[in-house]
Length: 268
Image 1 (spheres, rainbow, N blue to C red):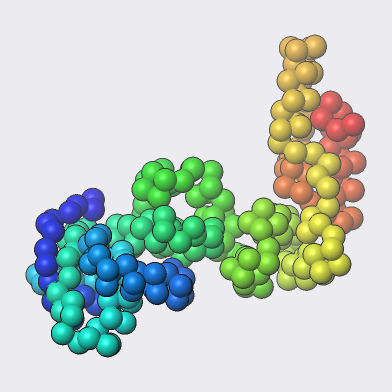
Image 2 (image 1 turned 45 degrees about the vertical axis):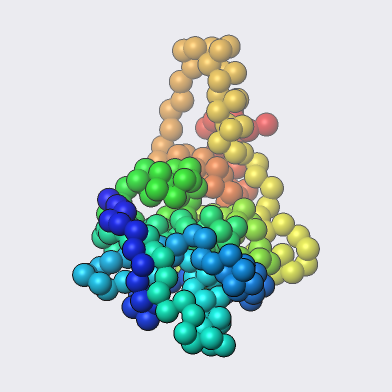
């Protein structure tokens, strides 16, 4: 559990950056300039947040732009701000990394991809989905999507997402297509999806069946016939799940035919 140990006034040279706890984006020079002018005029109004891993060993957790502004001031006036106000926190490295992400995300209007590495890191440290979501003020479904799709995400998709050239929704569509693709055809599936995007098309064919649509149709059938039953095979279930996952190409037509025959109430 992250705790605030104390507020202190420490030598600025003692505040360092930990290799696992850094800023999640390149510093914005406009923000650094803003803090530079504001600190010169009003002083450091909000303390830096530092992690005291060991006694008097401080690593920056929050305040990267403010620290950069102070360093810029000190470059011109070395005798200024040789000590700074800090909020000293304690916790495990996993908790500190999560706090670092939370503080930076709140300030930087973070993209979803800024959360990827930290969420995977926390998951590998045996944090539950609920704990991750609660700490980061996010929904559990949002965290689950990251854990489901990011580990196998094609690097090209991640790069486009990071650059803002692709939405998280489109990235998930491509990931779903890859997960539904036959073994060995994953890269070709990404190639096709990216080519469709370049042509201005959708990254994924229109869903012929969605979970919401299936639930609605099944509810209507149950209301009309509460005793309705289905006799299904594993292949039938596989076809149904593949359609719900957005199967594409010839496989989709095969799955559609099987689902229409086995679950006639679900498909028009």
